[in-house]
Image (tube, rainbow, N blue to C red):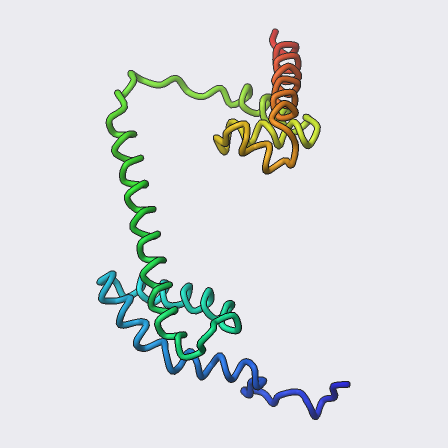
Length: 177
């Protein structure tokens, strides 16, 4: 049973937190140097070290050899940096594809009223139909991926999408003058 006496004083940390503090103080400078040499960017290096440290300390008690923490931390930094580079490469490829798209002549102003009507119609759909539409068309997930997220069969996803589209056509079609 804890009491006020057991609580740490202001500025003090509990023993478990102190262990993490010491671990961070011991390994963070070398980890930062590694991250900085990889990235050449101080801010990105700091972010990588923080992310790596969070991941590694969450698995710290599962390490077979506690002295392997430094190597595990370093490997995690390299993996996070590789993931960062992959994301950048994908973003650049997407930007290149967008720039390669032909520029269409003057675009018409969007029909705000129609967009609002469509949005309200989507919001009026039952929850699972709306989720199926969002996952399939906004998130661009495959039927199988959508089924996994919704925890249903691919056939059920198709049925949800078909019913949702029919409801949208009926609602939007009936509101036209």
